[in-house]
Image (tube, rainbow, N blue to C red; front, side, top):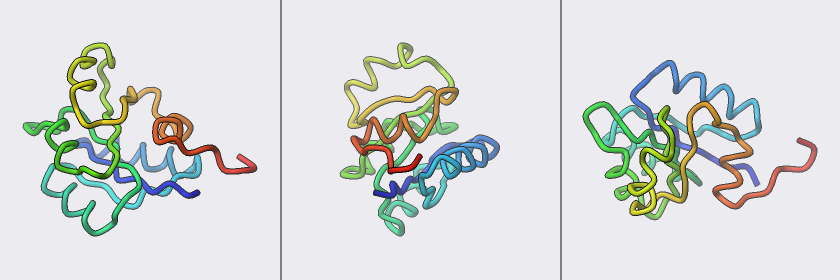
Length: 120
């Protein structure tokens, strides 16, 4: 199964680097957004299998976006430790958390419950 992702982050450099990394590792980055409004629009257009959402979207809350994206599965991402947000992540509709430094297709697939494609 090819996993189609929506990346949501207010940092353009991170969006470009994350897109490159995930696509090299076999995921399809169907689209990107930098704020809640853009993410909701892109999610409606693209119907991604999963959204990776930065916890802090400038002045907006990634947790609020996760709630609004339902039923699309959301993985929260941040440069901060998951321990810093453990209670908020658990209370949110997100299916998990990935530190941006540890971002990989393997980790995304694992949280979504999709196995690795054959030959990778």
